[in-house]
Length: 263
Image (cartoon, rainbow, N blue to C red; front, side, top):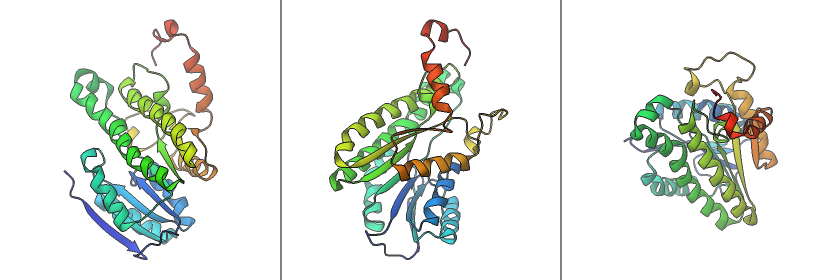
């Protein structure tokens, strides 16, 4: 278990009138790139992630880039039994909030999951169940205050099950459906729920992949799309944009043909 620690950088006390964003999985490549935009706009940021050293480095960098202040919380987000305590810490040290980005996950080997339900459960817990736990807390809070926004990184892998990654796809597909329902529920409370569906992104999580071809993009490109989607209060965003049409074609292939393909 990761020992929970909390640090405050910059201004210290934060007014609830400040522009604020919470990022779960703040040290991921995509999240760090998104945070650069929020720092430039002078947001107070609450950063939550596993790696305390990376959290410290990220916080110090964001202050240089213009962030108003930073709260960091070292936490293993996959342990959803600790989430109630986590949100207590957020409320005590960061106060009310308007924007949230959930940007963490794992990409386990498909073959490992096929041979072990424990591996499958681990993948589902990290990529789906723990995120749903966070969203339950966040959704109730934003619904009560009748405003706010939460953006969540899902994946194009959840649009259709493929033999190469259907365990990961199952987690992301379930998460996308949950977000769809949450968006439907919270729209009546002036709360914006955004589903982010990236395609192939060159990050440490995909380091084992052969990254040749035009479909692979850098985290910075996806981060720009996420930030713009949050500013424009979008609903579902494929990043880069062309993945919407790629996945539309894939979803339209009849199952009797699709099951014979090696994708």
